[in-house]
Image 1 (tube, helix red, strand yellow):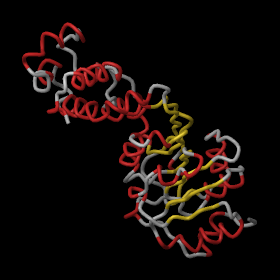
Image 2 (tube, helix red, strand yellow):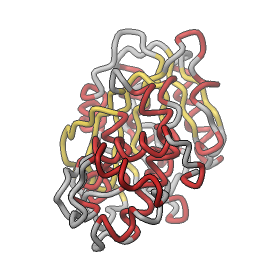
Image 3 (cartoon, rainbow, N blue to C red):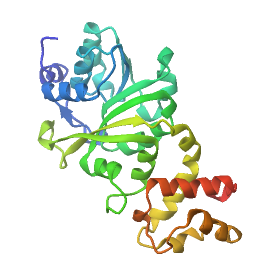
Length: 282
């Protein structure tokens, strides 16, 4: 296509809407950098959420993806995306809320998809948690978040950013920060910078996936009172008659706080609840 991203948006009279958390990326070189950072295999099946003015969409298509599915809820973008589709027939357009789309339905014969997206700030975390539960159908994810959320995802134990999102994401995925993106790269410029992260499912994710309801329960209890010591909340989720067994098996210092427990420790606690069929946890 011999037209800039901004010219394409202007041709269709597209303006960013605050209610959808829209911030447009007109820098084609940055879009290409993001597409390359995704390290997609040849002819990959890719899903992009919130393509907007199609800057990243075009970069992915020009990069040689096999099939690109874009999911967009704002109907204003349909004519623009259809214009791009006229040049790239391997582009599939789904006009729907991404929260209502299942990766299982989009995976096709490939059985898995690669997700590459500049996520809308207002639903990015919710989408990530939903996709984590569909990990069977995901090969990799390369996702842009506002910097604060990205820091929480990659945060290590003992840090103030560490929380439920850190635990769940790091148990299921190997997460790597790729690079920061300044707010000035967007139009209109948001108040915060962004960060690009890459997620690769861990080899043992299937075992962890079965524990997710228990992990969500435990981390909710822990981080809802993150300044309280372990002993103050663990007795509320472990039946009294099992406390001695819990202490001998897990062997935790009851003076530790939520941010002091590693993802592996949260998995141990979740596995204990599952093993003893503590249905109160779910």
